[in-house]
Length: 177
Ligand SMILES: CC(C)(COP(=O)(O)OP(=O)(O)OC[C@H]1O[C@@H](n2cnc3c(N)ncnc32)[C@H](O)[C@@H]1OP(=O)(O)O)[C@@H](O)C(=O)NCCC(=O)NCCS
Image (cartoon, rainbow, N blue to C red; front, side, top):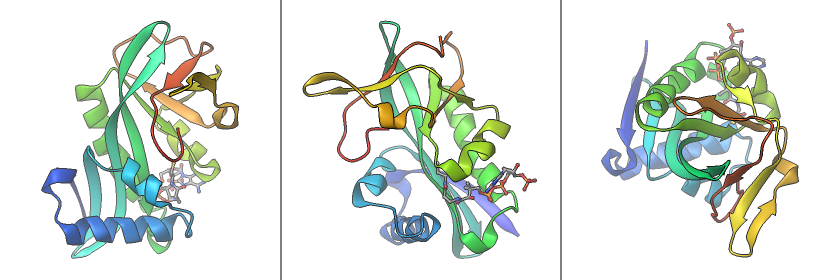
């Protein structure tokens, strides 16, 4: 019997955070970097437990996304992963259900960058592919992030979005989207 719990990073102990990091390392087949982990921190985590074993994780952190002259408060979803031997049991959906609740309650929109494998998963939940150009607000100014075009999904909440226009993310180390 699995249980989903949410908690802010501040309320998770070191053992749980380490378990989440190990889980994501496995879920992303070793392609999960220190920066990727850092991007998961400082917001709300959704954790799927089978007893004392962590089998699913995702988190939502605040970022600013520039769009049509406004700095939108975005709930940015990071580190969504389910242990390989526990997939297609609804655990990923349970994680997203909690994260979407947080997004709808606290942010102007949700956003994320999807792996190729997960596009059907997000689309089935109502996340919309961003069709316009993507960019980032870097220390050198706004810079196109064309490699990320076609992989960014948004969950509209309260504000009208024009999905063929530019969407610009704030600056950070590691992957910008
Ligand atoms: C993406 C991921 C989190 C999905 O977790 P999950 O627990 O298997 O997801 P669910 O069981 O809740 O799936 C719900 C629905 O999403 C869709 N879906 C999930 N995985 C899918 C896949 N690999 N291909 C196509 N559709 C998929 C299906 O419609 C599925 O419903 P169904 O099983 O009734 O057909 C998991 O595959 C994973 O950890 N992948 C590796 C890491 C990754 O790519 N994470 C996404 C980061 S952006």
